[in-house]
Image (tube, rainbow over all chains, first blue to last red; front, side, top):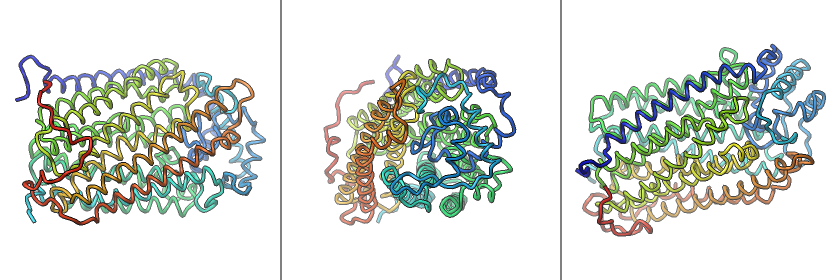
Amino acid sequence: MSQTAGGFTKQMARNIFYGGTAFFALLFIALVFHTERRIPERSNAQAITPAVVAGKKIWETRNCIGCHTLLGEGAYFAPELGNVYKRRGPDFIKGWMKAQPTHVEGRRQMPQFNLSEQQLDELVEFLKWTGEINTEKWPPNIEG
Amino acid sequence: MSTHILKYESQRVAKLYFIAAMGLFAGQILFGIGLGLQYLLGDLLFPYIPFNIARMVHTNLLIVWLLFGFMGAAYYLIPEEAETELHSPRLAIALFWIFLVAGALTIVGYLTLPYAKLAELTGNELLQTMGREFLEQPLPTKLGIVVVALGFLYNISMTVLKGRKTAISLVLLMGLWGLALMFLFSFVNPHNLVRDKMYWWFVVHLWVEGVWELILGALLAFVLVKTTGVDREVIDKWLYVIIAFALMTGILGTGHHFYFIGLPGYWQWIGSVFSAMEPIPFFMMTVFAFNMVQRRRREHPNQAAILWAVGTSVLGFLGAGLWGFIHTLSPVNYYTHGTQITAAHGHLAFYGAYVLVVITLISYAMPTLRGRVANSKQAQNVEMWSFWIMTIGMATMVLALTGAGILQVWLQRMPTDGAMGFMATQDQLRFFYWIRVVGGVTFLIGQFAYFASFFIGGDHVLSEDQAPALGGGGILRRAPARQRMD
């Protein structure tokens, strides 16, 4: 009863919703398909060794993302690790993880995960591979 | 006590869901304050509750209580909209207990077992889905969510199918089906981190900046229909326009997460352009809420519910719209990505859009579930105070985190050489982090006031005729506008 002739009706609004959503959803899917084909080259997919895969699993099952960011995503409690291989190098990363927690009073503490030497190497391989991803030059500097 | 206040007996199942939601909400805030303190007292509760575990509990509780809230809202709203009893109240109650027990066991698992051990015990080997932000739940929990979601959707879809089909219930159904559908991507975890991250956003972004906005719009529209008495035609039209803009900007807006995670550079253009328009539907929601309240045809006695509804529309715009916009353009995001700016936006967006819309619905529905049209004036006063205290607490937190984020960007991100390291920068942000804790404690006080409002007596409004006797409402007390816009 609120509709006047020739005005913008509820049916028109509904059609814009359905039509607009369908159009942009299809466009998004098309872009994702295109992006999928670019991912191998942009991420050096051929360099994903079994060690990298194992390292990713270690990363996940220790819930590292609950404190750190990886390529800027995660928690903001501890440093970015997407470029930690370049910033610190493999030996530092392994030594650091073995030395945790620092028990320095009042400082943020990282748990001791008791990783084996092989697991530490796998984690380092994962972080090394991650550091080679084409991130459009992000982060702005080495501090991440 | 009049029995006609609750139109359909089966709406009662919503009460369980609302109570559970509020209980989990309390837990979320307690853990949040713990996290805020750990930013300052790094070794607090270490090694018993390390930061990553507390954060997982904080964010997972948020997601689970919002899901409880959405489900409770649907169980309340759908019978009333469809004008028929719920298909199966017993299924709704059974699923409630399944979801609550599964959720509780998951949280206990987080807090009592090392995460790697939890992964091992729950069969993460079969399908590795754990350890990704917000999707940390063990495989059985994820499967449980799917089962509960399917049972829930079956129940409410059957109800709508046998009853009246309104725009509000259809939009709500689409939002909830979309929610369940997009969650299936949580089972997708390719070895390639870049791919993993891309599909991860199918859950996270297409939830909160996609299908959840349908749920938000439907719930808001429902409460506005009920409390303002404005013609449904008008409200439905607004609803469709809002959700049309939400999805037309939000779907390609996903691109604003694809800037720096290894995906092609063209996403910087797509993401910037479309996400810059994402505030539009939120702004329209604000105009919508104010407009409907101004054009109201009745004085609903539940003024608190109207305050929450208007509050949702304003704070949703500020948090999701404005605070999203400030760092959504790719040249800006290049510096702010993964800083405290993100945290500021995340907090205000979740509070403004989703926490408040669930409370809006609870505030409207809960009195009716307790046999009243509205709570007493005293109870509503406390409730309205709780809105302001929580909102001021949240605003304090968000401004503090924004300040922290700006300083962090300045010290750690802007300098091309000689930039300050992460931890050294964190030491410089302590002032802001203390303010954030103050904001968090304020929020907790507001939350406590909100819970207290449920227990305040006085003369509750027991029938519609008593309605106009009630005062309050502040900004909303202006006389209804006379002219019509359409």
